Amino acid sequence: MRIFAQKVTVLIALTALLFGLAAAGCVKKRASGDEKQGGQMQGMQGMPGMPGMKPGGETQAAQTREFVVPVERQQQIGVTYAKVKREPLRHTIRSVGLVVPDKARNWQFVSRVDGYVQKLDVTAPGQIVDKGAPLLSIYSPDLLTSEREFVELLRMRDEAKSKDARETPSRLINSAKQRLHLWNVTDEQIEELQKTRKPQENLTLSSPFRGVVQSVPAEQGKSVKVGDMLVEVADLSVVWVWAEFYENELPMLKVDQKIDSTAKSYPGEKFEGTISLINPFLEEAKRTAKVRIDIPNPDFKLRPGMYVNAELAMDMGEGLTIPVSAVMPTGTRNVVFVNKGEGKLEPRIVQLGSKYGDSYEVQSGLHEGEQVVASANFLIDAESKVQQALNEFEPSSSPPNESPVKP
Image 1 (cartoon, one colour):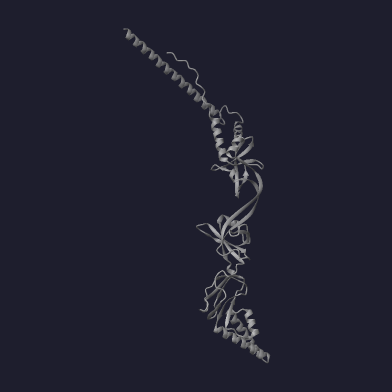
Image 2 (cartoon, one colour):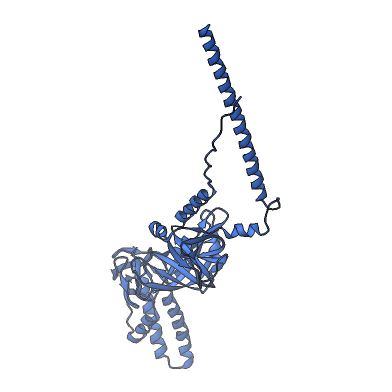
């Protein structure tokens, strides 16, 4: 009986303990529900138009966007500032161009008589020749016959006794001159023939300008026929540069517009040229159009086949500018951090215009003289998010002393 009584007593104690624990759990659940409902009501009171919203609450919330990053911390993460300033806006477009000879200044000597190349005075491409310098001489029996006829007509004109007798030789002399011109005989050579009255069996071709030999297809001693290429000379005192510009840059280009070019072979030196032609046809794949730039080249520094960089700078007026590094894009908006002093920073949304070099034009959101973070702005953004998270975090209060619930 004593053992049975002890077991009954233990069973009653356990039952009372379990009932007390269950009652305490009900009390905690009811209290947490009340706290949750109270928190929801408090959050709804903070929304515009809900009960408990104080007038001017939205303005106060907008004014609390500032956050503090201590100056020491800013120095640690490498924060630098830039001033919002008004300055001239210059837009520059660039392209790469290829130097080619001016085709209007390129001279190709083609044989106009049948004969033989007796002497080559130029032997290889790249040789510089002066104006009037001999290029090659051709032996031609036909040319010798024509010059003899010309000399004979001169003699007949000089020996004529009357004016009527001189008319026929004079008319034939003019025809002979035209025939000699067609055979590449120059006016100077014809005048020399009139003075000496000695026909020459060789025709000497001379350079019409100071230039560079581009090609020498003729070979010394070989026969040539009418139409054969003999020698090609290019005048490089003015060269062409064919550059390509994108279709959105074409409206900025105009004929007779000045444009500068630079070459790696001559660092620090600029070659000023003039836009002479804008091709209206676009390259479909690259969406570019070719633009021809005429550049004076008196010293022959720019050579055919050389690449140059074409650069056109245009004055676009004045405007507020900030460095490109100061802008932190967030998708559809652009944010900058404005320095308010003593470590205070304010994130601000700005409306940007075009990009000019390393700067953006600011259309709205900033005022002249303000300072913005110019570097480490992503670290500043991270600091602001950490502080926001810490401000929203509320540590839970310690649970009150609960007295055991008696059955």
